Amino acid sequence: MIMRWFPQGDDSVPIEYIRQVPGVCGVAVMLSKIPVGEVWPLEDVLGVRDKVRAAGLEMEVVESVNIHEDIKKGLSTRDRYIENYQTTIRHLGRAGVKCLCYNFMPVMDWARSALARKLPDDSTVLSYRDAEVRAWNPAEVARSMIGESRGFSLPGWEPERIPAMAADIEFYQSVTQDEYWKNMKYFLDAVVPVAEKSGIRMAIHPDDPPWELFGLPKVITNLENIRKFLALHDSKANGITLCTGSLGAEQKNDLPAIGRELAAADRLPFVHLRNIKHLTARDFDESAHLTPCGDNDMFAIVKALYDAGFDGYIRPDHGRMIWGENARPGYGLYDRALGANYILGLWEAVARITPRS
View 1: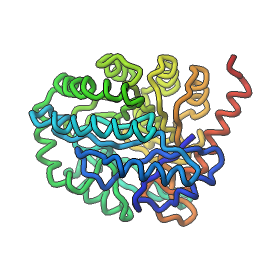
View 2: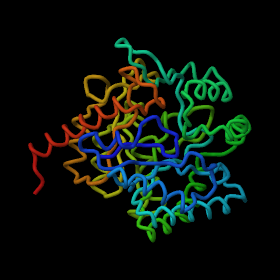
View 3: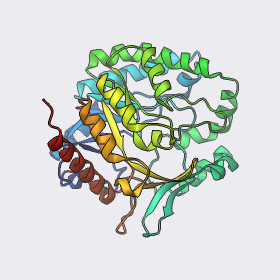
View 4: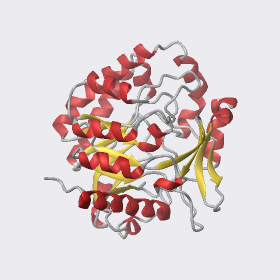
């Protein structure tokens, strides 16, 4: 069990507080101050690792080494950025990182219509209203999200990317889904062998939300596409991050079945566990982690992972903002700590009921 933490002064939560959450043994980090496409310097990676270790935790997972848009577009300039990505992977391996969570979503890594929608209990959550998002242009979406960010960085919504969003979206209107898959394979063929040599397992994050938006290609959206992705480069180092919030936004996705298949195939190094509550098929609020608070059967998901032999990393994902906390949207301490211990409780219950042989 780990939690996400943003170093270099980009988090309201002191890492020493995370150490006090029962059962949490590490953090997943990102270096948000490094421009997308540039190398994560070894000294910066080692410096963060040493700070994490000094707090009594481990840094075996890194998230959001974001991929430059030229790679996703398949432009002739992509090789320079791929070389930078390879160098970053080598640096992470030297620092003892074992899992790298990333995504291949074009233009915008994720989308919400509000980052602080108030629930009946006066907590606030990230939420998505499909009609609201589609009625905006990308610049309006960006301004809205950054305006609600409470002064913290938003991975995938880096300010330097925003001026080019409209042109990027226009570019993708002429990119077919098959072409996008080819661009993804080109990237995997270049970086997965480096990850293998560095002792790192790549774990791609699903599209969020997992449906068409602004005419952009969507790839990691369901089990069929996940199987297709894994076949692009057949390696245990080419895996999936099972995000139950992202994939669960599409109610047709059978989350326990997806988790069971991926864990049994040893292609699941990382899991983001969270819950969401649908208002309609395409409108939802993020919720507390407990099964009754949303639409995801958290017990069934945990049991499927356990039964399939999953032994990777799990973290509670986005939490509500509760108890007057002022933090990065989705990443306050209190509700994620509650979520971590709820998940650990489910895991202990399943393990006691059906011990592994």
